[in-house]
Image (cartoon, rainbow over all chains, first blue to last red; front, side, top):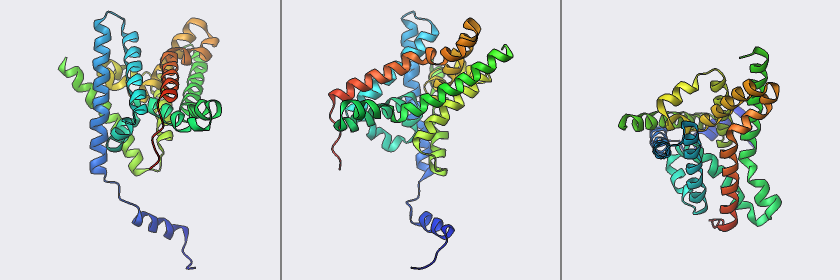
Length: 147
Length: 120
């Protein structure tokens, strides 16, 4: 066995790893994510045209995107967009819906409670835990500081 | 009308591009990025910095997961104003309840109905 340091090893790994072509991935993420957001805007305008208030329109638009992304995940279609869209399909709320649905579907074979039911929260769990926790800290600060 | 879609596209696209930069140049996993963006949204919402972007870019700001964090902060502040200390606990989930519940429910139905993809 040759004695290589961890540092040498890191350099070797970097050389061997396929280079991420950022000049491609970043514009593709921009375009894909931008289109999903523009679609969200179209839903917001649609719900506003039905006479609901702004907050309701925003929420309804998000839920519509969630529904579409969940269906697309079930149909194995979302993965295909994600292959070239990268973060453009991860960062929008549709990526959250996909991250909930995909493991739930994949682990269905391990049972409906600890398979489907538990894995449904594999990504949603951490997101909700840290999101709600930071919200509570903000709430406490707002209460103490009387914002 | 056109400009509204244009800015939704540009702002939303830019936020996603930031996520792609994190994937390409750091070792952040998708799960870490989602968590970070939501927490970032709470922070930006708490500082009052995100609402102007939502007014400006609409879906471009509300659709990315930062918007979800912003909604937690917004709901928390409103609830603290109305209910005091209890609002700090109830506000964040209340304002995001519809989105979270919808995600869970839709995912359950789809996971029950559809077949997992074949492992290649």
